[in-house]
Length: 497
Image 1: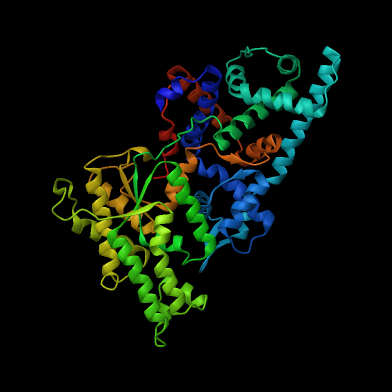
Image 2: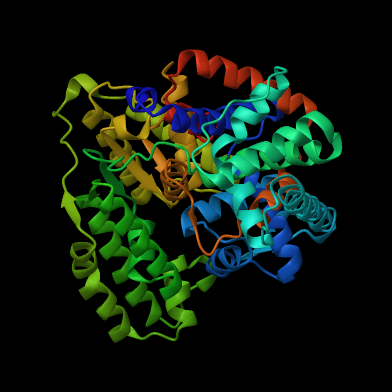
């Protein structure tokens, strides 16, 4: 990856350095990372849509319609969780809910309108300059396109060179580029107000590029050779036991993982647990004395849908079909005598997981949950054996990973790794949300019918760049320009794991 970045053409290298420098700088100055960039967008959307509760799929659709940015289901959950940590969202009984006193404090739209007004002013001045100096008639559409395309190519150079008291030299390959260059150069020399707006626009262009990841080297096949093992609830969600909408989201997620060349598995004991849960639900649903207050999410869903035993039989029958249709294979975990050189402290892991569960839920009873608990420990133990002592620092070095829907389990496994004096950048177990977010972070953000002028204004308003951030950004650009080397995977995993 480092070599690929170093071999980029100079213009592309400059753009990539700009995006990466900004991401590193925002972390160092503000302790905010890439996901934090989107929190003001989400808050603004919640405010505009007046959500009473937050449906993840609807938010994905509305985010795309409002901002032209496509954030898939799993990273959107990651974004919602980040907003929850910031107090903008709270977890309800079975949904996310806005915290309106916090949401109302987000002042986004006035700043967007102010930035759009400045851009329109630049366009007006550019049309006037072209007519006055070159006797050229320029339409508003042409002027807007010319200034935005020029900045898209030279935004980092303009910011960096101007701050070093040099007006940048650029390649003049067309009449439109020449007119735009001369307009900016004239503003630099004789019109401080317009040039201040142009500098704001250049900063907005860098922010937009960092948001969209357009200039980051795309890691195609980023999961090639990685074995992913899914937990029980992941497969149950895939089956549709928590609704068709969620099932479709998980199908799309698995399709993406397959396209990234990951090998998809469940352990044999996970398969047995899935079948056991479905059969237990069938038994309980026909028992009129069942205590539904202790029912599993699967059983509650079946009750809500008024399913009978025959309906549940259909779920049992389709388990193998769904697993096969999604390119998932069933595999045995290593036997106790296999790969003993890489055996972990089983009892310590078990104790760590139970401790984490009790911290989340003081009434957690490990005896009642013993079967599921031991299966989880067996799965994690298998991943450590498959890794054979390797300490992966990036997702595509991870050999094998257990993917869970259980945040507490993932946190416990991370804690266990740290207690063993090994900092696994990619632990043996991570959540499906985190995996989806990492993949999204390492790819250019998809856009639909994007209004470049609007997204630049949105980015300036949302991220509020200040003098301190700009100074640190320039120092980081200077450093990276000298090195011309960086592993962007490092940038995108600074704080997520």
